[in-house]
Length: 490
Image 1 (cartoon, rainbow, N blue to C red):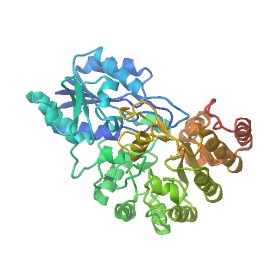
Image 2 (cartoon, rainbow, N blue to C red):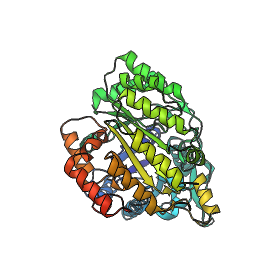
Image 3 (cartoon, rainbow, N blue to C red):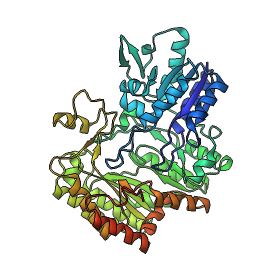
Image 4 (cartoon, helix red, strand yellow):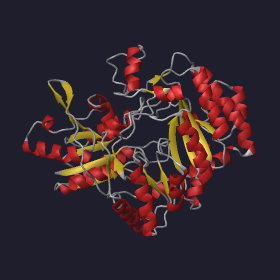
């Protein structure tokens, strides 16, 4: 078949992630003998027109649309990305009668509901390298799509899904050569590298295991390093990002990767998406720094034992405190994510977390991003809690932005407490401030100067600049129950 694969992510809220997942699917589809063209809509000035033009030029037998995000996941920046993706599906249909298949993380999370919201014929769940080529083979042979694991199809008027299969192993992404890297570089993006898949953690608010499964499958460290070296030589990104669901759980693959980089003598800059306090240590951070990590992101969500237990994080407040001290000692710029208002949150438990931020996340290059309200995702423990408490209806597919807030707190109180932290510590940022004009301008300037990402490591210094700091503090005092910059998107 002639297969057109479309990357639909257009969000400017965060630094744009290149389509690593779709690149894996493209490679698997080519290995199955199909002709593949990948269309990346992120840099397009008029994405719908670009897509229609590509459909006419390629004349595909089937179009696959990858949808990364459902929405912003911020209660104060509500806006669905499904509508834009549905518009792209409609643009395809205006040009061709070819079947439209949707996939990507958002689709895996939504399951059968994705067909209704996106207007597609079929959907692929989980790892597309398995399901998508098998689906193409089933369609070519005239077999029922539901004979393939990890597929959603309409049957008898209703959308039905089969359980996804999981890859036993996987290799390099083949992203190089499939996209134009220059727009991503200008936007301060990092080059994604996946070293392992599967998340054994069962955090109450997270559904990562729905996308990748629970079983951890790690690539050989030397193979990952070879991929980094090849991309460094051919594409030359300024920073590589390890995008594993948890960089250091289990710990061994993280250690082996760092050691392999050092053994190879590879001089590259790296960052990591998700460093977990459970196995963080001064020894790990020292090894990461030697290997070339210029930053890391951590998502403890809380620094209170009661809240951590309710969120099923699997570690304690002591783990979070030790991780903060280890990060400070290593001198690695660190971006910390905290989540207020989850199950069983009270003013006292939230105070524990925010006080910890004020006392312990305060060294140069450190930032604390705080969210108020928990996005309720289908299949999560928080979703079950929300149904039990009557927050959402049992038949709500949760495709539209829906947030859980503990009945023991109010959003106004939580935001006001975060605002007091902003007054005390300029490196504290509410999620409503992310992706605004100031951050965007900082990224463009630093990227233009050739500074390696992640550029957020300079944000604490920028927001501490006296005029901007004074403005943020005026906003926090003027509207104590509104995140600074929520309306002006600073």
